[in-house]
Image 1: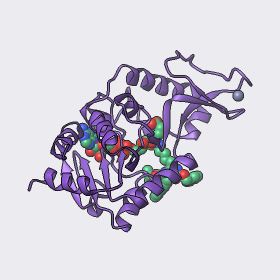
Image 2: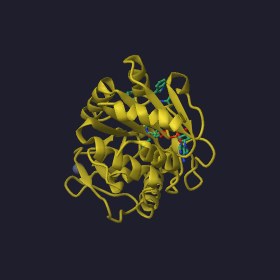
Image 3: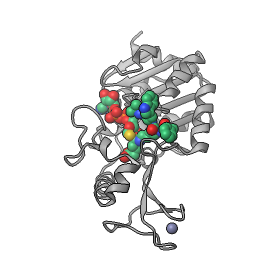
Image 4: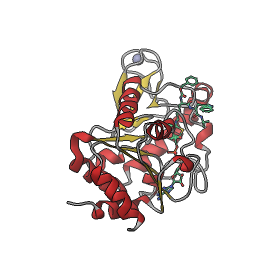
Length: 244
Ligand code: BJW
Ligand code: ZN
């Protein structure tokens, strides 16, 4: 049996499947990852901009970075990896949970529903004054957008370092992983917590963990099966190996 067939067997037996994705799944859509080669956005290091401190000291630069990313993502399309996960979700429907660290919404554009966005998304904004969240998808933003209600600065509704994840989303993700019979971990370096901790939670519960990545990661030692390669190639192969 090939590695893919072994993993397909695990998935076909699984009653509850969870998936955790990271930036690597969108790399084949032309969206740079955060770390490693090519992990620079428009010449900038994303890690120095993904903090509340960076926003407080230079909101115009941080907004320029996020406007650039909103535009890039709007011009990009989901790839076969996103579509394969959407199809997997349709097959398993209520027994399938897709958890993503990505803020690009490409899973939803590929047809996935009920996606748990651990780190928010690029298209909502939040007021730094009255804390309301507004949908600004498809809207051209000025260099320093302000709240229509209270006039305070708006910020991207993403989760920066040192900030808490949305509690309801996090609790649903934890529960899904605790109850899962299989966890697929796709395209993440598994360096950022608490998201990476979901892999350890699954392993502690005896849940088979399958990693799909170009390379080994910080948590590869805890996974049961590592499929090395592009998620846009491996996920469709995996889908094709499942009984219809
Ligand atoms: C492919 C591929 C292909 C490429 N096919 N694969 C020490 C220990 C533990 C924790 C901490 C610590 N010190 C500080 C912390 C906490 C901190 C943290 O984890 N830091 C670590 C870096 C050490 N975490 C936090 O602060 C979190 N909050 C928190 O803990 O709250 C509690 C708290 C409250 C108050 C004070 C302190 C704590 C929040 C984390 C928020 C992360 N936010 C970002 C930015 C989001 C907005 C934005 O997008 O701009 O989220 S950072 C960035 O990293 C982004 C990503 O979602 C996240 C993960 O990155 P990801 O997805 O793994 O991407 P890469 O680039 O790292 O990896 C890509 C992978 O794809 C690679 O492996 C490639 O090989 C692979 N690949 N092409 C398959 N075709
Ligand atoms: Zn406001």
